[in-house]
Length: 252
Length: 165
Image (tube, rainbow over all chains, first blue to last red; front, side):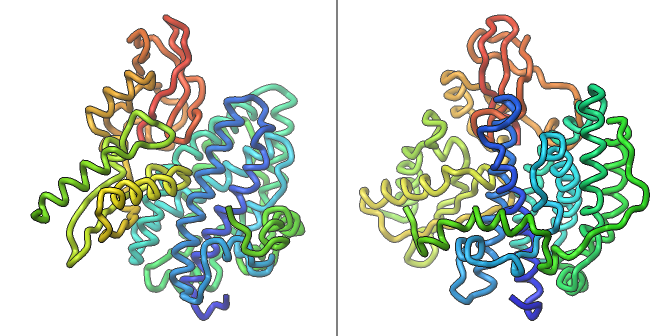
């Protein structure tokens, strides 16, 4: 799992992002604020887990060492996960969850759009498939940012505090890890710094309409993309991987 | 039999496999089956998922294998492709008629609402029960990822809309 194979590491990074956020979102299933949104959010979780499967399958093929989509998802430990810090953050309240989804969907939308041009055909195909789903996620989360940000005093305060809390995890998205930069040279991936302006324009448009304030220049956390995570990921993996760890190779 | 006959027979058999979540539509109506061709001594069947996370795909592949093998066709591979990405524009007209009869509004043509713009004009979706266009969107995500939830303002029945994708 070293950087000797930047494509493999990059595929795991993309897959881990999708799986970890999909798992976080699935924690809302059965607990959504209203039935329709419980269903909507579970569907978003399902889309993300589906995208993760496509990416893990391709990663397993690339690794060619006997790995499978399941072993990659269930048998790696925190240091081997390459997801960004944003997606592993705990759900908190509905506003915090919506804000996390909005920040990530905006990033993922422009990322997949750029990966349509990837010279790696399978990666471009996964991006093409996923982009249609992410367009819905971005629209759904943008609309909720505005409804709640420009809602009641209580909802506005909660949304602003979610924006302030999660903002610190967004800087990492645009700092290319060595595997991203290595693949950018061959036009397989892109240097994510190139997405920052598009992302910023989108965030500004939606937060302005939501009457929310973008935090001033703040300290940005980093490390997730290279396997240095917040404590949140350990708890998530403990729950998600429990069955395969306790009963190896269990299936049904 | 000639290869062309075999390929026709495979299409006919596959049109008996229904989507487990939409039992009125076959995987041919849905355009999940993209291509059947002969490659050397084998048939290659190309399929594409509707949504990345569609939980029905594994079951669909199992049912495809079962129907082909019980009809004596054993020399085939099923290959999944993701590009070009599946779109509701590929759904057959016969499929759209069957959907409506089942109580689900069929997808509108074109991709006008499949982008990330917010709060834009909702499409006028016809109620599959009373045919009124006076309907409203309740939720963009319905009982499965491929459907949105609507309600008719005339007959007041809630219904699923197979949303454009």
